Image (cartoon, helix red, strand yellow):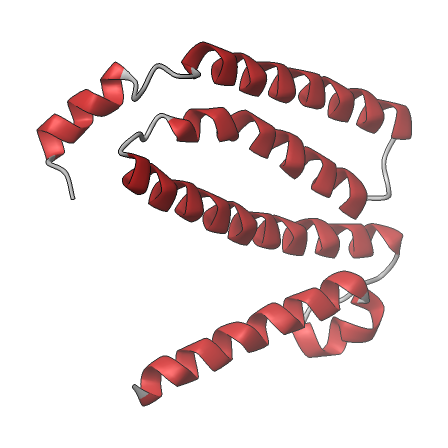
Length: 146
């Protein structure tokens, strides 16, 4: 029990430190062990830490979707959320990296948005009211169910 509490405290401390470094990289550089020389260094720190927080957010979203899929007994709902997740990730990275050729960044982000939303909406339309996809049913039979 005590170890579990210490793990939670360490995890919370890591997240708070990462958020602090993400918001104010110059003031956190001595504490986090990374050195920021110029604007590019700030962008790199924000990109790396942003990737970490995107991963945590994605883990939370996918875990929630997995629990909902267990309740609904329909694992194919996850397919609908994959592509909009790429859109979210793209725009978070766009906002965390102010350096770079802005027209290229806007073009790539816009194209990812169009692609991700189009595909996510198409899969939603295609799967609406049809129940779980055949491949998920097959995997469930092979592995057993909860």
